[in-house]
Image (cartoon, rainbow, N blue to C red):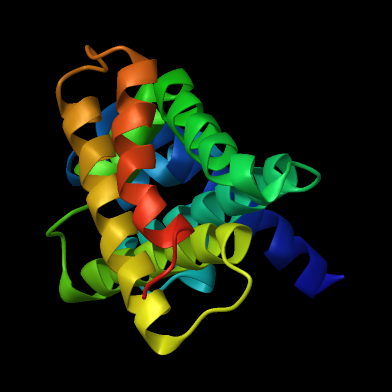
Length: 189
């Protein structure tokens, strides 16, 4: 029962952090603000997290995992040649539909700390694996590196789009990302 309540409080803190970070950005948020939004005291925060950065990584990781699962589900059942387009279109639609969330967890998160930057590297690798798994029959070590590089470039397209307030039409953004993605889609010779 105590473990169950602790788990519930953790979920409350994660949900509150998403809300607070999306509204204010991480750098303009505090443990106190997250706790107030969760309706909990700081004591419960430190029961689940060592510090704000640990909460940020937990929230960003949960968000990334949720997005990857959604993108995988959308790609399932789609012909292999259409998977890249499907994944990237849905990725960019999600960013556009949640601009504050996209800004908080893609733009403002950068450079906070080495721990957070390490998380960002792993998030790009996870996205690269999704792209490679959806488009390639097999994945050599070189293919994996190409996928990580291409996805890094796709993420930079997303960052530019977000920073410029989603001003470019989504079809153009997806087309640019797909051009990079075809490097993965075509494999490596």
